[in-house]
Image 1 (cartoon, helix red, strand yellow):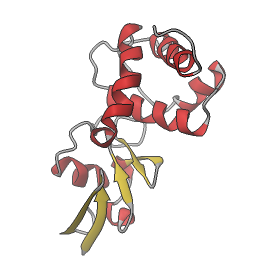
Image 2 (image 1 turned 90 degrees about the horizontal axis):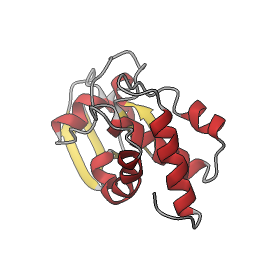
Image 3 (image 1 turned 180 degrees about the horizontal axis):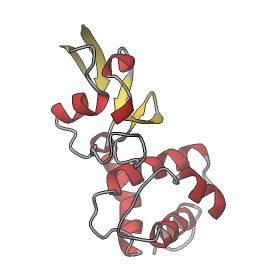
Image 4 (image 1 turned 90 degrees about the vertical axis):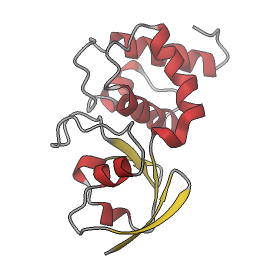
Length: 155
């Protein structure tokens, strides 16, 4: 089948197999931030935006994205870099493997709820697996980022 897709703002039209997963398609097109961590929709490492909504690309056929806009971390560099600095400043990134999926979901949270409670943050990010940290650094980083965005000092 022919897949017509907008990947990080670039229009692509390509022949694919009907069973091609979205994760494989985006990685084949240079989007290496999208990680394969579990293949069971449990870790969040493969998170991408389809029409600005976070989805797990390891459980979505590429054909379902036909005619849609797909955004990976490569397409959100400015937004991701600003937030990522707050995560790094809190010591929340250790090995860094989970960071792309985590940052994608945090950005989705900020867009949906610009002033979430700690409980809402933890609930929203519950699908992101991090084997190195206890998530406290990520929560502190998110809080510091939101304080900064709301006029507070940079962490």
